[in-house]
Amino acid sequence: MDLLTTIAATRQYVAGVRHQGKSIGLVPTMGYLHKGHLTLARTAREQNDVVMMSIFVNPTQFGPGEDLDRYPRDLERDQELAAAAGVEAIFTPPVAEMYPRGYSTYVQVEGLTEVLCGASRPGHFRGVATVVSKLFNIVQPDRAYFGLKDYQQAVVIKRMVRDLNFPVDIITVPTVREPDGLALSSRNKYLSPAQRRSALALYRALNLGADLIRRGERRAKTVWEAMTREILSYPETRVDYVAVCDADTLEPLLEIKGRVLLALAVWVGNTRLIDNLTLEVKDHVARPDEE
Ligand code: AMP
Image: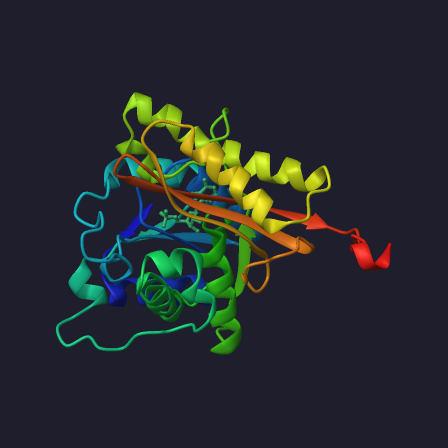
């Protein structure tokens, strides 16, 4: 396992891999690895000759008052887990390596970043798009791996790659969950045992919404209300947003049709958790005037 902390060393490592004619898969993370991250790494392992992972708690994607300073870190444990998942090299730069004095260039994906998490966390996706652009320029991977747990992030990165012509394939990987359904997240560490029980509200609300739709409900407002009620029935929960939207454009739906994204962000105590689920609604619901 190679631990790379400078851009120069990383470029040199990548040049060596390229010289051998090998392909590279990149797994960008903020570390404190769990099975979600490791699933991305294993998927990359199957599809590339060499897997590289970045571990960087990116300050530009955190807003003022967010958890940048207390974000969990454990590089030693991460190295072991990553190596076991087939990662050959970890790029883990200090902040000044990525953002030296006078740093002033940012990548802004418009529209898609103004809804859902983008509305609650202004500047978040600007930070994400910027750091991912930098990682793509530094590593120049053939493929890069993103989890659908951060659905909007994956959509934003795909749009950025298309719009800015990055020569990289974006591969998305389904959300990995605990046995009871809670999506794995480094932030789950913040939860007390009671909050951990309340955190199940997210998965339960998503399934409730999906069930309503499967049973024929087509009014987004009704689904939204049922999901919101479900979340608030758990102690210590506060809704940041509940959204019923088009899975491609992320625009809110009035009538449920096509590829639908149910997405939510919920505060459990002081911890903000997100989750989502997509489903396809193929039928055509007759409006009263068509019956
Ligand atoms: P993070 O370290 O939280 O920035 O996440 C790094 C990558 O892992 C992102 O592409 C996430 O979407 C992905 N990821 C995080 N949690 C999960 C999960 N439970 N299942 C699948 N992918 C995940």
